[in-house]
Image 1 (cartoon, rainbow, N blue to C red):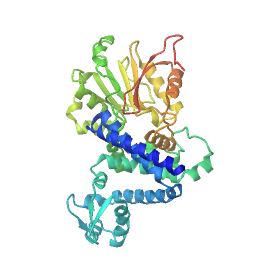
Image 2: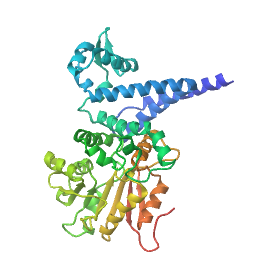
Image 3: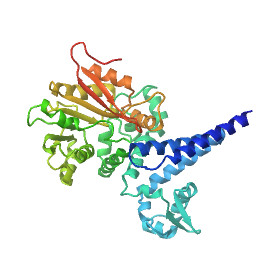
Image 4: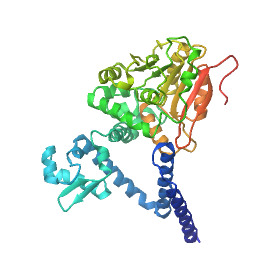
Length: 411
């Protein structure tokens, strides 16, 4: 009976997969991303149905070895040395890198075995369509590198960390699994990575790739800015992008809404990041005020229409987030809004938010559910107006206003 049930389940899944593939016309946009994820999930379910449980430890072992080689090859710029078209001998590749041929061959064979690289003949190697993701110029590859260094390195030190600090969440930005793994427990994540200019630059580059999975647009209509600009005095900032990195969000917003005057937008981040933005002099950000600012300090821009926090809050504990938000509440005018863009943690969760939450656990931050957001905003005198959401992504824009007396979160 079990075999019959399994076969029926497989037949049902096969039909679902076929029907979903037929509707997969345009891979772009949130709808295309949603359909592609659905295809992948159904295919995974088919594999899980036929796979034996005792096979999984061996699969994990293979994946760990593959990830180790990927990270080491990125460190040595191996992928950059493989020609874009054609192949290269293991001997020539090793000579270009300054490594032993036997070492490069043994490591590369792991990637050949998984299909990440393609072997040509017995002694040559070539790119696959996947391996080019890990070129030094590709921000997606940089994201893997950051996840490995911040996540995997921390996970490997979890047993040691939790034995020393107790089996409880880390709620500080120092003495975290990450800082302890890097043997610098007194430093926070930013202090650790800032010591290595290349690692800091790689981190900033990796942030650009998250726009594909954590979109800026599609949830909230930013034409709201000009529709409500009259609520604040002329010359007052319409939007302050707090911790806005290199202006990735502002560039997308300005590209879509050219009616918004760049001169009334403010980009804030750490001094080193703002200096990079100024030096880059991106045409789309010309006119935007670039301001070095620590969001744990008093917000210098008062009465702005919008204070915007994108992918900031999950980096920090509830206590730290209350401090960040309290500084903005103090700066708000009567018509100001705070907009927070974050993944909404579902119960039960899906893979990407769960993975992100464990990285944040290692850094002293966390992903949050809707109930978490209601509670957090209410604690600092905010009324959570609405979660702006759309299909195809778990990212939402959380709209908040100052709470009137007797008006708070709806728990």
